Length: 613
Image (cartoon, rainbow, N blue to C red; front, side):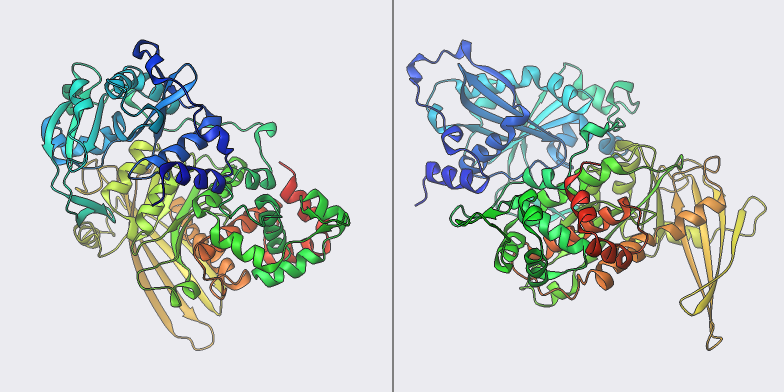
């Protein structure tokens, strides 16, 4: 049986942690005085160690927080004794919601004011120390709200947690004056709904962080200090990191044995090969063997006994794509692309949508899905992406994208799959952005209402685009828009305009005509966006299909790729998005043109990978 120490050692090796630093030095527990124990947030350079210890010793393991998170450490004279993890409150929980008595209309707006104690761990070196758990929990609660404010810009009103009664009875929470609210019903959340039953209902505890917390949370009037809208981030030139530096900061999940080439070197060569139009591990190996000694040296390649810099083999590229954490690689795209995003418009428009990797899914095992959700500008530039591992996980992945990019002041266009009240509240209430939704029959009440609107009334504003010819057809688009009173749509509290788009197409060769009618809503009022702008946003949303998905399929061969192993398809898709982000950042409008340029001028390709600018 794998012991906790062995598991931690292997995890430290996998994440490239110094093992000697991952374990605590021996100390005499008899000398520990609880009065000297302190709780503080984990520093940035301690987060990987915190994550490794939690993953190795906690029975639930640990990968990352869902949404906002905070890591606390209990320390005695430099020794780590316990770890406490906090994240945003649970989406729904009947005992808590009954206890608070808040209305459903304010529930979503207040979830960010609740901290969920999702992980609590006494480290093996401190097991058996009397009263350490309640002391640690009490100290963590005292500073929780202030630390959360420092990390996320707002204070917390309430703390909550769930205890598995088959493992623990929750004595430390009773000792810290938490209130038992009862047991949950035993349903897990799946695809936005609590429909997956499990056999272990949890006992729920809550602890107000101020005396009137329950009354404040149930009050229908919002308070200014509760705002958690993102603060615009200004990126100076010195803060921009190169792609290679971001690759170097990723955890290397390969085995330590035989690891000659660093992860940053392998991923940098993969990105260079894609810029030059060389796709797949075999083509990447041929490209790498064509690099000269100076280029291999600056990329950090392995040096053999004869002093020559050598390129990785195709099997190395395959292993890296298969074993690399796809979320870590997606973070590289976000960290590189988002700071470089700039729009001259006062309301920059972004589009988000999901894409299934067809070639990988045709040969995937039963139940396995390879999908990605991508956030792009209406110019087609990728800003962030997330992997969807479950059927129907596109909606959750798109909501996760909202936390990856500063959306304040932007308009997010989404298709009808994402038109729901929860996504609307996340965009407007939490992230301070606006939205434009297509509306179809999956929102039957709203769709039926829009169909019955009198679109010929005098109050309706209209705009039409002249005939546009392309792809063997002539298309004319027209839009009719009208204002919506607040609360006019029961499911969409922030909707301010409704619109109808009519597309008339004529096939040039045959003369056949067709007409398509589409409906939608937006939170942008008429004073900020007239019908001409709404029509431009409606058409610009297709950049996520034509500018991103089609380029990845037709030019970068994503669907035809034969990469199948483990995380390979997901990482291949993210590398394609990284390549597209570099192409757009370098001023190219067409990917084949960029491929030819970077193939002929490899120095420009190296500059794109190695230079922060």
